[in-house]
Amino acid sequence: MFTLPHLKPIKPYKSIALLTSGGDSPGMNPAIRGIVRAALNSGIENVYGIQRGYSGLIAGDIQKLSSRSVTNIVQRGGTMLKSARCLEFKDSTIRAKAAKILHEKGIEALIVIGGDGSMTGAHLLTEETGIPVIGLPGTIDNDIPGSDDTIGFDTAVNTALEAIDKIRDTALSHERLFLVEVMGRNSGFIATQVGIACGAELVVVPEYEFDLHDLCVALAEQRASGQGSSGIIVIAEGKDPGLTSRIAYQLEEQGQDPKICILGHIQRGGSPSGHDRMLASCLGASAVQYLLAGYNDIMVGLRQGAVIDIPLRRVISEKKTLDQNIFDITTLLHK
Ligand code: ADP
Ligand code: F6P
Image (cartoon, rainbow, N blue to C red; front, side, top):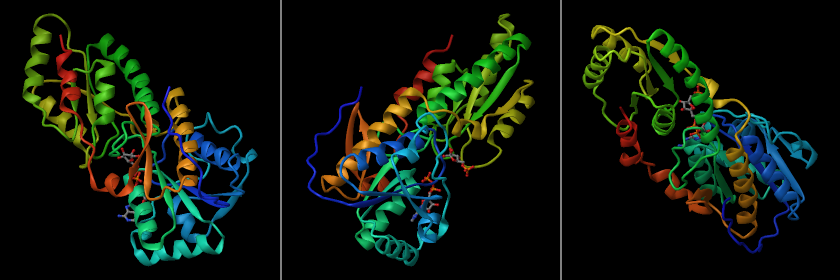
Protein backbone atom coordinates (compact mmCIF):
# COMPACT_ATOMS: atom_id res chain seq x y z
CA MET A 1 0.00 0.00 0.00
CA PHE A 2 1.28 3.50 -0.80
CA THR A 3 1.50 6.46 1.57
CA LEU A 4 -0.34 9.49 0.21
CA PRO A 5 0.39 13.18 0.93
CA HIS A 6 -2.00 15.26 3.04
CA LEU A 7 -2.73 18.35 0.99
CA LYS A 8 -5.00 21.32 1.66
CA PRO A 9 -6.98 22.64 -1.32
CA ILE A 10 -6.39 26.36 -1.85
CA LYS A 11 -6.90 26.81 -5.63
CA PRO A 12 -10.54 26.60 -6.75
CA TYR A 13 -9.89 25.45 -10.34
CA LYS A 14 -13.07 25.02 -12.35
CA SER A 15 -11.67 23.60 -15.61
CA ILE A 16 -8.68 21.35 -16.19
CA ALA A 17 -7.48 19.14 -19.06
CA LEU A 18 -5.36 16.03 -19.40
CA LEU A 19 -3.45 14.25 -22.15
CA THR A 20 -1.32 11.14 -22.73
CA SER A 21 1.88 11.54 -24.74
CA GLY A 22 4.84 9.56 -26.10
CA GLY A 23 4.96 5.76 -26.04
CA ASP A 24 1.77 4.41 -24.47
CA SER A 25 1.98 2.25 -21.35
CA PRO A 26 -0.42 -0.14 -19.61
CA GLY A 27 -1.94 1.90 -16.79
CA MET A 28 -2.50 5.13 -18.68
CA ASN A 29 -6.24 4.35 -18.69
CA PRO A 30 -6.55 3.90 -14.91
CA ALA A 31 -4.51 7.12 -14.54
CA ILE A 32 -7.01 8.96 -16.77
CA ARG A 33 -9.89 7.52 -14.74
CA GLY A 34 -8.16 8.52 -11.47
CA ILE A 35 -7.70 12.11 -12.62
CA VAL A 36 -11.22 12.51 -14.06
CA ARG A 37 -13.03 11.00 -11.08
CA ALA A 38 -10.87 12.71 -8.42
CA ALA A 39 -11.30 16.08 -10.17
CA LEU A 40 -15.07 15.84 -10.57
CA ASN A 41 -15.44 14.61 -6.98
CA SER A 42 -13.28 17.48 -5.69
CA GLY A 43 -15.37 20.31 -7.11
CA ILE A 44 -13.67 20.80 -10.50
CA GLU A 45 -16.63 21.31 -12.83
CA ASN A 46 -15.07 20.65 -16.24
CA VAL A 47 -12.51 18.01 -17.08
CA TYR A 48 -11.34 17.92 -20.70
CA GLY A 49 -9.60 15.05 -22.47
CA ILE A 50 -7.12 16.06 -25.18
CA GLN A 51 -6.71 13.52 -28.00
CA ARG A 52 -3.31 12.31 -29.27
CA GLY A 53 -1.06 14.16 -26.83
CA TYR A 54 0.41 17.53 -27.77
CA SER A 55 -0.74 17.01 -31.40
CA GLY A 56 -4.38 17.10 -30.31
CA LEU A 57 -3.71 20.09 -28.06
CA ILE A 58 -2.40 22.26 -30.90
CA ALA A 59 -5.18 21.02 -33.18
CA GLY A 60 -7.81 21.89 -30.53
CA ASP A 61 -9.01 18.26 -30.44
CA ILE A 62 -10.40 18.56 -26.93
CA GLN A 63 -13.60 17.04 -25.48
CA LYS A 64 -15.30 17.22 -22.11
CA LEU A 65 -15.10 14.01 -20.06
CA SER A 66 -17.70 12.85 -17.57
CA SER A 67 -17.46 10.33 -14.78
CA ARG A 68 -19.30 7.89 -17.10
CA SER A 69 -16.84 8.40 -19.96
CA VAL A 70 -14.10 6.70 -17.94
CA THR A 71 -16.25 3.71 -16.95
CA ASN A 72 -14.77 0.30 -17.77
CA ILE A 73 -11.28 1.49 -18.65
CA VAL A 74 -9.46 0.61 -15.42
CA GLN A 75 -8.62 -2.85 -16.80
CA ARG A 76 -7.76 -1.79 -20.35
CA GLY A 77 -4.29 -1.38 -21.87
CA GLY A 78 -3.42 1.53 -24.17
CA THR A 79 -4.95 4.96 -23.66
CA MET A 80 -8.52 6.00 -24.44
CA LEU A 81 -7.17 9.49 -25.25
CA LYS A 82 -4.69 8.03 -27.77
CA SER A 83 -1.03 9.03 -27.74
CA ALA A 84 1.32 10.58 -30.25
CA ARG A 85 4.72 12.03 -30.81
CA CYS A 86 4.50 15.68 -31.82
CA LEU A 87 7.83 17.10 -32.90
CA GLU A 88 6.31 20.56 -33.47
CA PHE A 89 5.86 20.94 -29.71
CA LYS A 90 9.62 21.47 -29.41
CA ASP A 91 9.00 24.88 -31.00
CA SER A 92 8.12 27.66 -28.52
CA THR A 93 5.73 29.40 -30.94
CA ILE A 94 3.73 26.16 -31.12
CA ARG A 95 3.66 25.98 -27.32
CA ALA A 96 2.34 29.57 -27.26
CA LYS A 97 -0.39 28.45 -29.68
CA ALA A 98 -1.22 25.56 -27.32
CA ALA A 99 -1.56 27.98 -24.39
CA LYS A 100 -3.87 30.21 -26.46
CA ILE A 101 -6.12 27.24 -27.24
CA LEU A 102 -6.29 26.31 -23.55
CA HIS A 103 -7.14 29.93 -22.61
CA GLU A 104 -9.85 30.12 -25.28
CA LYS A 105 -11.50 27.00 -23.87
CA GLY A 106 -11.27 28.36 -20.31
CA ILE A 107 -8.90 25.55 -19.30
CA GLU A 108 -6.87 26.67 -16.30
CA ALA A 109 -4.42 23.78 -15.80
CA LEU A 110 -3.07 20.69 -17.57
CA ILE A 111 -2.06 17.20 -16.42
CA VAL A 112 0.36 15.33 -18.72
CA ILE A 113 0.90 11.56 -18.54
CA GLY A 114 4.01 10.40 -20.41
CA GLY A 115 7.75 9.80 -20.46
CA ASP A 116 10.72 12.15 -20.09
CA GLY A 117 10.09 13.87 -23.45
CA SER A 118 6.51 14.60 -22.43
CA MET A 119 7.73 15.99 -19.08
CA THR A 120 10.09 18.33 -20.99
CA GLY A 121 7.18 19.63 -23.08
CA ALA A 122 5.08 20.12 -19.92
CA HIS A 123 7.84 22.03 -18.13
CA LEU A 124 8.48 24.34 -21.08
CA LEU A 125 4.76 25.00 -21.49
CA THR A 126 4.34 26.25 -17.92
CA GLU A 127 7.67 28.11 -17.87
CA GLU A 128 6.86 30.05 -21.04
CA THR A 129 3.10 30.55 -20.75
CA GLY A 130 2.28 30.31 -17.02
CA ILE A 131 -0.30 27.53 -17.54
CA PRO A 132 -0.03 25.34 -14.41
CA VAL A 133 1.05 21.77 -15.27
CA ILE A 134 1.46 18.54 -13.36
CA GLY A 135 3.22 15.51 -14.89
CA LEU A 136 2.68 11.81 -14.22
CA PRO A 137 5.39 9.25 -15.14
CA GLY A 138 3.82 6.99 -17.78
CA THR A 139 6.29 4.77 -19.64
CA ILE A 140 7.16 1.08 -19.63
CA ASP A 141 10.88 1.98 -19.50
CA ASN A 142 10.96 3.12 -15.83
CA ASP A 143 13.65 5.64 -16.78
CA ILE A 144 12.17 8.79 -15.24
CA PRO A 145 14.36 10.46 -12.58
CA GLY A 146 12.83 11.16 -9.18
CA SER A 147 10.34 8.29 -9.20
CA ASP A 148 11.19 4.71 -8.26
CA ASP A 149 8.45 3.44 -10.52
CA THR A 150 6.57 4.44 -13.65
CA ILE A 151 3.06 3.54 -14.77
CA GLY A 152 3.34 0.49 -17.07
CA PHE A 153 6.74 -0.87 -16.04
CA ASP A 154 5.39 -3.69 -13.88
CA THR A 155 2.97 -4.88 -16.59
CA ALA A 156 5.66 -4.77 -19.28
CA VAL A 157 8.02 -6.83 -17.11
CA ASN A 158 5.31 -9.42 -16.47
CA THR A 159 4.40 -9.58 -20.16
CA ALA A 160 8.03 -10.23 -21.07
CA LEU A 161 8.37 -12.85 -18.32
CA GLU A 162 5.30 -14.74 -19.50
CA ALA A 163 6.80 -14.92 -23.00
CA ILE A 164 10.28 -15.89 -21.78
CA ASP A 165 8.96 -18.68 -19.54
CA LYS A 166 7.42 -20.17 -22.70
CA ILE A 167 10.64 -19.70 -24.65
CA ARG A 168 12.52 -21.42 -21.81
CA ASP A 169 10.35 -24.55 -22.28
CA THR A 170 11.31 -24.96 -25.92
CA ALA A 171 14.91 -23.86 -25.22
CA LEU A 172 15.24 -26.69 -22.69
CA SER A 173 13.55 -29.27 -24.96
CA HIS A 174 15.92 -28.53 -27.85
CA GLU A 175 18.95 -27.51 -25.77
CA ARG A 176 19.02 -24.20 -27.58
CA LEU A 177 20.33 -20.78 -26.79
CA PHE A 178 17.82 -17.92 -27.18
CA LEU A 179 18.51 -14.21 -27.47
CA VAL A 180 15.41 -12.37 -26.25
CA GLU A 181 15.26 -8.66 -27.04
CA VAL A 182 13.19 -6.48 -24.73
CA MET A 183 12.39 -2.77 -24.99
CA GLY A 184 14.64 -0.07 -23.62
CA ARG A 185 16.22 2.24 -26.15
CA ASN A 186 18.23 4.18 -23.60
CA SER A 187 17.87 2.18 -20.42
CA GLY A 188 18.15 -1.35 -19.11
CA PHE A 189 15.55 -1.33 -16.33
CA ILE A 190 13.20 -3.74 -18.13
CA ALA A 191 16.06 -6.02 -19.22
CA THR A 192 17.56 -6.15 -15.72
CA GLN A 193 14.33 -6.88 -13.89
CA VAL A 194 13.23 -9.40 -16.54
CA GLY A 195 16.70 -11.00 -16.62
CA ILE A 196 16.78 -11.52 -12.85
CA ALA A 197 13.20 -12.78 -12.70
CA CYS A 198 13.56 -15.29 -15.59
CA GLY A 199 17.00 -16.52 -14.51
CA ALA A 200 18.76 -15.33 -17.67
CA GLU A 201 22.30 -16.55 -18.33
CA LEU A 202 23.31 -13.04 -19.41
CA VAL A 203 21.68 -9.59 -19.45
CA VAL A 204 22.84 -6.93 -21.89
CA VAL A 205 21.94 -3.30 -21.13
CA PRO A 206 23.02 0.04 -22.64
CA GLU A 207 24.47 1.16 -19.29
CA TYR A 208 27.14 -1.53 -18.84
CA GLU A 209 29.72 -3.33 -20.97
CA PHE A 210 29.28 -7.04 -21.51
CA ASP A 211 31.79 -9.71 -22.41
CA LEU A 212 30.62 -12.11 -25.08
CA HIS A 213 33.83 -14.09 -24.89
CA ASP A 214 33.21 -14.92 -21.19
CA LEU A 215 29.72 -16.05 -22.09
CA CYS A 216 30.99 -18.33 -24.85
CA VAL A 217 33.48 -19.91 -22.44
CA ALA A 218 30.71 -20.46 -19.87
CA LEU A 219 28.42 -21.98 -22.51
CA ALA A 220 31.21 -24.30 -23.75
CA GLU A 221 31.90 -25.42 -20.14
CA GLN A 222 28.18 -26.00 -19.62
CA ARG A 223 28.03 -28.19 -22.72
CA ALA A 224 31.22 -30.07 -21.81
CA SER A 225 29.87 -30.89 -18.35
CA GLY A 226 26.82 -32.50 -19.93
CA GLN A 227 24.38 -29.80 -18.79
CA GLY A 228 23.21 -29.19 -22.35
CA SER A 229 23.53 -25.83 -24.05
CA SER A 230 20.18 -24.22 -23.47
CA GLY A 231 20.06 -20.68 -22.17
CA ILE A 232 18.38 -17.30 -22.27
CA ILE A 233 20.20 -14.03 -22.96
CA VAL A 234 18.06 -10.95 -22.35
CA ILE A 235 19.09 -7.93 -24.42
CA ALA A 236 17.77 -4.37 -24.09
CA GLU A 237 17.19 -3.09 -27.66
CA GLY A 238 19.55 -0.12 -27.18
CA LYS A 239 19.95 2.90 -29.44
CA ASP A 240 21.43 1.21 -32.51
CA PRO A 241 19.03 -1.06 -34.37
CA GLY A 242 20.26 -4.61 -34.96
CA LEU A 243 22.22 -5.13 -31.72
CA THR A 244 20.63 -8.55 -31.09
CA SER A 245 21.45 -9.74 -34.64
CA ARG A 246 25.04 -8.58 -34.21
CA ILE A 247 25.36 -10.53 -30.94
CA ALA A 248 23.81 -13.59 -32.64
CA TYR A 249 26.36 -13.31 -35.46
CA GLN A 250 29.26 -13.13 -33.00
CA LEU A 251 27.91 -16.16 -31.13
CA GLU A 252 27.62 -18.09 -34.40
CA GLU A 253 31.26 -17.30 -35.09
CA GLN A 254 32.08 -18.89 -31.74
CA GLY A 255 30.28 -22.08 -32.73
CA GLN A 256 26.91 -21.39 -31.08
CA ASP A 257 23.53 -21.70 -32.79
CA PRO A 258 21.41 -18.96 -31.16
CA LYS A 259 17.75 -18.30 -31.95
CA ILE A 260 16.42 -14.73 -31.80
CA CYS A 261 13.10 -13.61 -30.32
CA ILE A 262 12.24 -9.89 -30.37
CA LEU A 263 9.36 -9.19 -27.98
CA GLY A 264 8.83 -5.64 -29.28
CA HIS A 265 5.58 -3.77 -28.84
CA ILE A 266 3.79 -6.70 -27.18
CA GLN A 267 5.39 -5.27 -24.01
CA ARG A 268 3.49 -2.01 -24.39
CA GLY A 269 0.03 -3.61 -24.57
CA GLY A 270 -2.26 -5.69 -22.43
CA SER A 271 -4.31 -5.27 -19.32
CA PRO A 272 -2.43 -3.33 -16.62
CA SER A 273 -1.24 -5.41 -13.64
CA GLY A 274 -2.78 -4.89 -10.18
CA HIS A 275 0.31 -2.90 -9.20
CA ASP A 276 0.05 -0.59 -12.22
CA ARG A 277 -3.69 -0.02 -11.70
CA MET A 278 -3.03 0.91 -8.06
CA LEU A 279 -0.06 3.13 -8.94
CA ALA A 280 -1.94 4.86 -11.77
CA SER A 281 -5.08 5.41 -9.68
CA CYS A 282 -3.14 6.84 -6.71
CA LEU A 283 -0.87 9.05 -8.84
CA GLY A 284 -3.85 10.27 -10.89
CA ALA A 285 -5.92 11.19 -7.84
CA SER A 286 -2.87 12.74 -6.12
CA ALA A 287 -2.07 14.87 -9.21
CA VAL A 288 -5.48 16.53 -8.83
CA GLN A 289 -4.87 17.10 -5.10
CA TYR A 290 -1.45 18.65 -5.75
CA LEU A 291 -3.03 20.93 -8.35
CA LEU A 292 -5.79 22.05 -5.97
CA ALA A 293 -3.14 22.62 -3.27
CA GLY A 294 -1.49 25.17 -5.55
CA TYR A 295 1.45 23.12 -6.85
CA ASN A 296 2.75 23.70 -10.38
CA ASP A 297 5.65 22.51 -12.57
CA ILE A 298 6.01 19.22 -10.71
CA MET A 299 5.77 15.53 -11.49
CA VAL A 300 3.91 13.31 -9.03
CA GLY A 301 5.85 10.09 -8.51
CA LEU A 302 6.60 7.32 -6.06
CA ARG A 303 9.58 7.07 -3.74
CA GLN A 304 10.01 4.29 -1.18
CA GLY A 305 6.29 3.60 -1.24
CA ALA A 306 5.25 7.23 -0.78
CA VAL A 307 3.56 9.45 -3.35
CA ILE A 308 5.74 12.54 -3.66
CA ASP A 309 6.26 15.61 -5.87
CA ILE A 310 9.44 16.32 -7.82
CA PRO A 311 10.13 19.61 -9.66
CA LEU A 312 9.85 19.02 -13.42
CA ARG A 313 13.10 20.95 -13.87
CA ARG A 314 14.85 18.20 -11.89
CA VAL A 315 13.04 15.40 -13.72
CA ILE A 316 14.21 16.63 -17.10
CA SER A 317 17.75 17.60 -16.16
CA GLU A 318 18.77 14.39 -14.39
CA LYS A 319 19.26 10.84 -15.61
CA LYS A 320 17.94 7.86 -13.70
CA THR A 321 20.79 5.44 -13.19
CA LEU A 322 20.58 1.68 -13.17
CA ASP A 323 22.01 0.67 -9.82
CA GLN A 324 25.17 -1.42 -10.27
CA ASN A 325 24.29 -3.63 -7.26
CA ILE A 326 20.97 -4.59 -8.84
CA PHE A 327 22.61 -5.24 -12.19
CA ASP A 328 25.25 -7.41 -10.49
CA ILE A 329 22.48 -9.71 -9.23
CA THR A 330 22.08 -10.84 -12.86
CA THR A 331 25.48 -12.58 -12.61
CA LEU A 332 25.57 -13.29 -8.85
CA LEU A 333 22.78 -15.83 -9.18
CA HIS A 334 24.51 -17.97 -11.80
CA LYS A 335 25.23 -21.65 -11.19
P1 ADP B 1 8.20 10.10 -24.01
O1 ADP B 1 7.36 11.17 -23.43
O2 ADP B 1 7.61 8.73 -23.88
O3 ADP B 1 9.64 10.20 -23.52
P2 ADP B 1 8.99 11.35 -26.48
O4 ADP B 1 10.41 11.57 -26.10
O5 ADP B 1 8.70 10.93 -27.88
O6 ADP B 1 8.25 10.29 -25.58
O7 ADP B 1 8.21 12.70 -26.19
C1 ADP B 1 6.81 12.79 -26.36
C2 ADP B 1 6.45 14.13 -26.86
O8 ADP B 1 6.84 15.13 -25.91
C3 ADP B 1 7.15 14.58 -28.14
O9 ADP B 1 6.54 14.04 -29.28
C4 ADP B 1 6.98 16.08 -28.06
O10 ADP B 1 5.66 16.44 -28.37
C5 ADP B 1 7.19 16.33 -26.58
N1 ADP B 1 8.60 16.65 -26.34
C6 ADP B 1 9.65 15.80 -26.30
N2 ADP B 1 10.81 16.47 -26.14
C7 ADP B 1 10.48 17.79 -26.10
C8 ADP B 1 11.23 19.00 -25.98
N3 ADP B 1 12.56 19.00 -25.86
N4 ADP B 1 10.55 20.17 -25.97
C9 ADP B 1 9.20 20.18 -26.08
N5 ADP B 1 8.45 19.08 -26.22
C10 ADP B 1 9.06 17.89 -26.22
O1 F6P C 1 7.77 3.65 -24.54
C1 F6P C 1 9.15 3.61 -24.56
C2 F6P C 1 9.59 2.70 -25.64
O2 F6P C 1 8.86 1.53 -25.44
C3 F6P C 1 11.06 2.37 -25.75
O3 F6P C 1 11.53 1.39 -24.89
C4 F6P C 1 11.14 1.95 -27.19
O4 F6P C 1 12.41 2.06 -27.69
C5 F6P C 1 10.23 2.93 -27.84
O5 F6P C 1 9.24 3.23 -26.89
C6 F6P C 1 9.63 2.46 -29.12
O6 F6P C 1 8.54 3.26 -29.43
P1 F6P C 1 7.92 3.51 -30.87
O7 F6P C 1 8.03 2.24 -31.62
O8 F6P C 1 6.52 3.91 -30.56
O9 F6P C 1 8.72 4.61 -31.47
